[in-house]
Structure formats: C-alpha cells, structure tokens
Amino acid sequence: MSRGAWGPLLRSGVLGAALALAPHAAAQPYPAKPIKVLVPFAPGGTADIIARIVSARLVDELGQQFLIENRSGAGGTIATAMVAKAPADGYTLLFIHQGLAFNAALYASLPYDTLRDLRPIAMVGATPNVLVVNPSVPVGTVQEFLALALARPGALAYGSGGIGSAGHLAVELLESLAGVTLTHVPYKGSGPALTDLVAGQIQTMIVTMPAVVSYVKGGKVRAIATSGARRSPAMPQLPTIAESGVPGYEYTPWYGWFGPGALPEAIAERLHGAIDNVLAAPAMRDQLGRQGIEVEIMLSARFAEIVRADVARWGKIIRDAGIRAE
Image 1 (cartoon, helix red, strand yellow):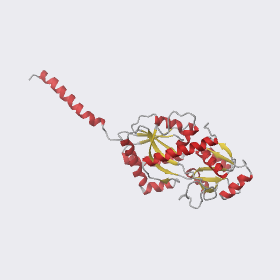
Image 2 (cartoon, one colour):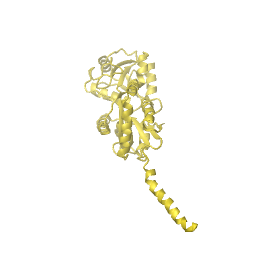
Image 3 (cartoon, rainbow, N blue to C red):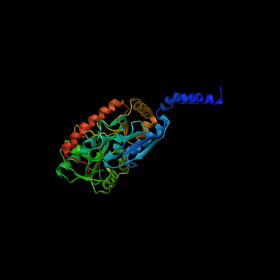
C-alpha cells in the first residue's frame, strides 16, 4: 500500500484513540483544581479564622489548594449570591455562619432563595456567645443585669455589628424573653463596638467567644453568662443565660460549608467526608476549641434540617420585632 493510502487510516486511528480517551479525560476525580472559598466577612473575624483553620487541613485531605476570598458587604448576601449563582461543580464554596438564616427575613428582596439555591454540605460546629459588660457597670450576674435594666429602661446601651447582625438579634431575643428594654447602638462591625465597650461608650454586648475572650482575660470587660443551651467548655465557670433566670433563651450560632443548590450528590459527599475527617482529628478539635468552637459532626441532611428550622425560627423573631437590614 502506498504511503498516501496509509494517511486516512492513520488519521482515523488517531481520531479513534482520542475519542476513546475523551471520556477518561472528562471524568477526572474531584477535585482536579484549586477550590475557591468565599467568606462573606472581613479578614480576622470568627468565620474567617475558622475557614482558614479547616481549609489548611483540607488541602492535605483533598490534595488541592483552598483559596480563601473575603467578600464582605450587605450582611454577607453579596458573597452568598455569588455562590448561589456559581457553576455547581464544587469549585466555588461558601463558608458562613447562622447569619445566612437571618438574612432570609432581614432583606425584603434577595437575589437567591436561601433554601433552594444553596446546598448545606457540612457543619463545623457552633459557638455560644458571651454576655459581657464594661467593668463600670455594677452587675456580676444575669439577675443583677436584668434588675438594672428593668429599673432603668433604655439606660443600658448595647453595641452590635449593625442592624440585623448576630449581636443585634441575640439581644433582641433576650429583651423579648426577659421583658427588658436596652438601647441599640449599631456599628459597622463588632470590632468597633468592642472598642467602645472597653472605652465605656456603651455598656454591654452579646458577642462571639473568639472575639471577646482576650478582653475577658485581660479584665477589660466582665463576662456574665454564655448564650448556649449548656455551659461552654471554654468558659465552664460561667452559667448560661437560660439557667440564670431566662428560661428558653438559647443562641448558639453555627458555622458551616455550603455550595450551589444544584451541587451534585457525589461532590457534596466527597466534600462532606473530607471535612468530617478533618474535624474528627483531636488536634483540630483542640485548635477550634481554643477559638470557642464546639465541633459538631453530623450528616449533611441533619445540617440542612437545622438551616431550615433556623430560617423559620429567626424569620418569626425578625418579623415580630419589625427589623429590616440597612
């Protein structure tokens, strides 16, 4: 056969081989490239710290880099919308706290549906908040705090990271259950609010444990109680608000991983398994525990149930209080 006659056969063979290999090339195991993680808050906050701690270990678990991208603004809804609208391929994830559930009611119109357009992947854990006061406030217990608030309605000013923020809603819940009135002073972030609390410009806050623990240890603020259903291992000497005379009070914001709503089951399970493996390590539990995080490993379906319940519960609280995000 002439050299020219071999050409079509050779080209046919090359094409056939390429086609045979194509499915294998397309079916590369996940993940095959770095994963972007959107954190909808500024660097240095609790969510940012936790995302970076866990992501550093996920690099070893999954063999790819996890690239943290801080996209703050609009109460976290900007970054959340970006993930909700991202390709459902597992390469754009969201790490956020319970504020995700608040936002469903705080904003009159969101560019995504919280329960439809986001898929809960894995909870990392939860952290009770701490009720703290400036040392000049003459109270050392929740009962004394409430007695002062009842005697002087509106005289105690509390700070938060803004209208509709976690620190705002945690105090709204306390006011509704205890029948007291405090004065809300919203800030652009909990950091500036803490600065004014230490300076005595405001009198009290309910704030995340990681953010305030150094101030408590330094004597710059006085811790009165924690907000969880049980005492925190990080501050076991402090009673809970509920056991101190406000039955039913519980505020333990969770932190977790989400993907786009259409994220395939196989990718979600791959991520869930990797995150759970990381969280199961005693060293990781200790490291997160020092940040005030109580690790909770659970099925992704259970996490989804918690998200749905919180959207309903906090939606009612927010609507009843007439709160709207700025």
